[in-house]
Structures are given as structure tokens and as C-alpha cells.
Image (tube, rainbow, N blue to C red):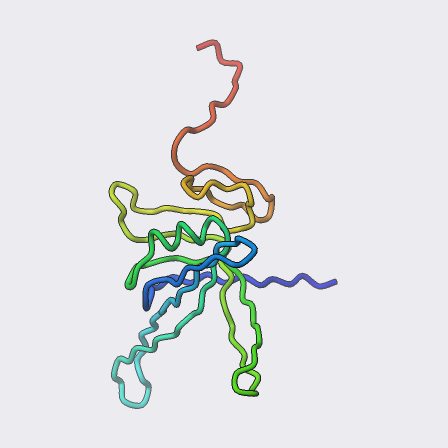
Length: 158
């Protein structure tokens, strides 16, 4: 079977404050839109132009609550996740929407002394939303970014 991958990484700014809700099953869900910009020179006119793309982002679990607390309109964020297209009915017409299901976020806005905060997505059901981790998805291991660093045992006499 050939190798496949569904991975998205976007860096941009929020277009509005996040929308937060809790599902009837108790799952936290946070939705927001991220704008990314690309500047290019128009070949015909030679003028610089800017193109903006909007990305719908959905965050689940403990990370959703953290995102809702830290993100606001205009916040810079790096989102890593996967694309998911879903469909729904509106006035008898089938509508499609593509969303980025976030696995991890990097908040690129300064919050006190912490300038970059990395957290995991809902993949780690035991993640404490007040702790900040990097999610190593391939090995399904989690290592703490800030705070105490585990001491390594060695055979050195000093």
C-alpha cells in the first residue's frame, strides 16, 4: 500500500475571536478562522499584489479551552493538523466545508514572559491544559517543553 499523508501547517492571524462550546457529551470544541497572506508581483502590470486565504480551524479537548483563553482577533498562531471535508444540508442544498482539525498550536503572541507556548491537541487525552507540551505524533510520546527537565542518570562520579 502506498504511503499517504494528510498534514497541514499554517501560520497566520485570527480574523475574529474564537467560538467556544461544549458538546452534549462534554467535549470542548473551539472554532476560529485564520488568515494567511501571500505577496506576489503581477506579471502583466508589475505591481505588488496581496492575496489572502481563510482557513477554518477546529480544536478539540483540553487544547480547545486553552485556545479559547489565549487567542483573540488578530492573534498570530501556528496550527498543525489535518484537512477534513464535511458536508451538511442548508435549505435543501448540500454544502461542503473544509476544516483544519488541529493537533497542535503554537501561540505566537507574547503572554507575560512566555512568548511561545506549544501545546498538544486532543490526541493526548491525559494532557493537562495548563501544561505545555510538544506532541511527537510518530512515536506517540510527549515531552515537556518548559519546566522541570528530567535528570538523566549517568555513571560520572561528579
